[in-house]
Length: 158
Image 1: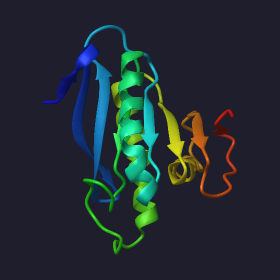
Image 2 (image 1 turned 90 degrees about the vertical axis):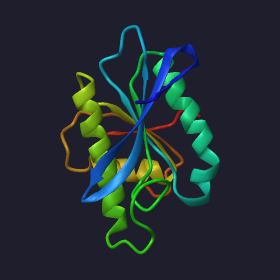
Image 3 (image 1 turned 45 degrees about the vertical axis):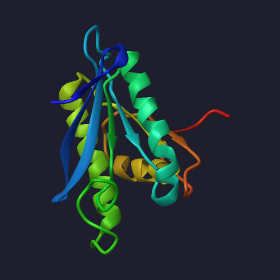
């Protein structure tokens, strides 16, 4: 199952378990050719910003797949096609857990822990999901919604 997109890119939907809530995810990968050993988990912003970033992040995942990376896009619980809504208890914990689940899923597919790309609140959530972990992951974040203090955080070059 999955759609083959021009340039032999495959997009496949699947589900992640985020503390018992299903989180919708899409994996993008090259249909043929070599695959790089580290994938990329894309952590989107929230709310109105997500609506405007969705198409850009989809194209980012496709371009990463064209370059040989396995890329994973996700919808946090209570957003997009994922289960839950704004009244879900401990929603922020579910959001961070969905990123952790994405990292673990992608690490099973590729041979190493993936890198993270976080946009706005996605950068903050990615940093939170990395806290107290020894995954050896690098985070590339842009315009984090809160001050992020993590040795894994690499600000977006301006």
